[in-house]
Length: 120
Image 1 (tube, rainbow, N blue to C red):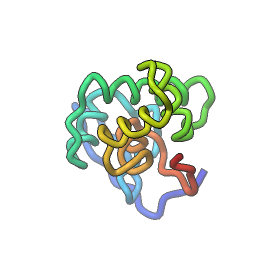
Image 2 (image 1 turned 90 degrees about the vertical axis):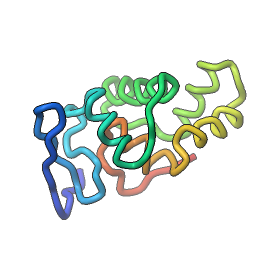
Image 3 (image 1 turned 120 degrees about the horizontal axis):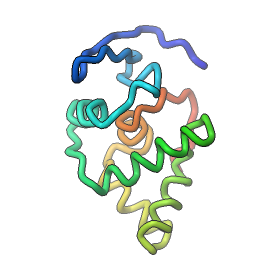
Image 4 (image 1 turned 180 degrees about the vertical axis):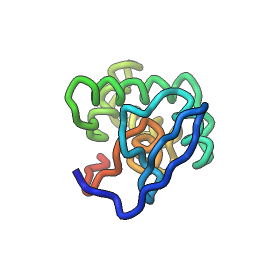
């Protein structure tokens, strides 16, 4: 695991949450819906049920595999969930998270900041 250059602490719903210099959680176990709403608000995303379908998939994948899902897995999940093509799911994903998988979806879902990542 990469050690962040700078760690800051914020208080969300009475809990102290540590983040790195880019605003990603240091400990993904600190995540909950209050944290998601706070992080989303910081980057201008108003979370809907549709967002939470993706965020919950990402959290479940992390719990099961102990590693964050690759963007392509999220697109495939969305396609299967909605009965659409992967290409259509990817387009819809970017309507929900216009600045992308890492900068919005991963941050809001409480993933650690990746060093290198395929964004699909």
